Image 1: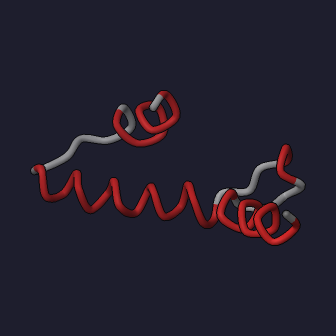
Image 2: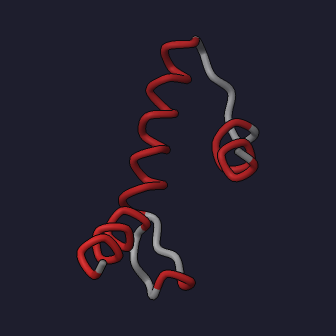
Length: 56
């Protein structure tokens, strides 16, 4: 939750709980599907998991 707080929660103010929910959903999509990690050979977490599961 540390990254979530530092990358989303502390960087902006939310107008309402609905606004927060929309931003949270967008952040989670980014975090799981589009975020590139050097530790994972430049792949987003979702694709890295798919490759690991298909290799097993």
